[in-house]
Image (cartoon, rainbow, N blue to C red; front, side):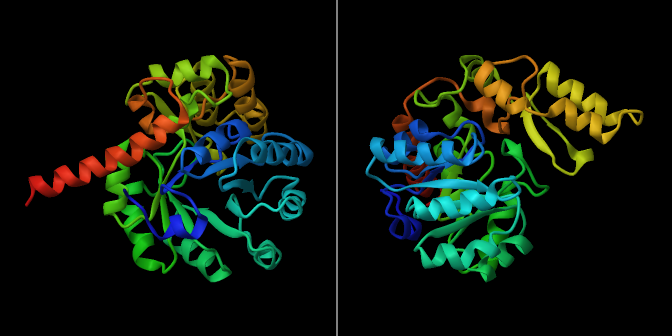
Length: 314
């Protein structure tokens, strides 16, 4: 069985994180992943602070295994969430879109493990210096907000630079991707896109269908002109947004207004004007299945690939 130091640190069986996807990662999905031996994460972007508090409490009713909360630090209520997770006794946090440094003393005093998401070596080093317990190094193959570096060159450079554990993310969808990440030095993997089609994921069925129908060239990155690039599935919405960005007569304010609330529309309504965020590995997702099956396939598949590859090159 594949285990790593991050399993011992967090009390999980398998080194598999479920991405804390905004408007997607709720108590149902997080608990299912945690019950399967991985680390389930609840997004703090799903609604207001009290709604997130309720998801945390619901998750505790669904699992007695470790789970965490993902905090987007640029959110208007990030400060409220930062204090609320302490009140609720959450012990694992992942963070993104900003530095968690101002909250570190409070979180550390509460015994919380803090794992920021990073997209470069420089940011990873800053997070280690700030007191992070590990980092998620996320390559540009991922869905949602992306950086510039891709997973294959990013992971070994971050691993070489840090002393703390590194979780690899971006384009990892099956045992082959997990095995590759482990070979690059990662202590765990974080998976988002494949969990979109888990039975326990409560997104609109149209969203799941779009992911399953995706091919290798079904994603597009928009938002570069705004300084916030986002990878999503190619839809009339994302194609229109790309055209707006290339049109000098369209202002950034108009583009922002066009994209406002688009992810929520996709998740909750299956709306044609929604933003269906997904990673480049969407073309590898073939079926809806329980979260437990996904976690086991990632780990057992990685073990099989590592064993077979060792034999092939021995």
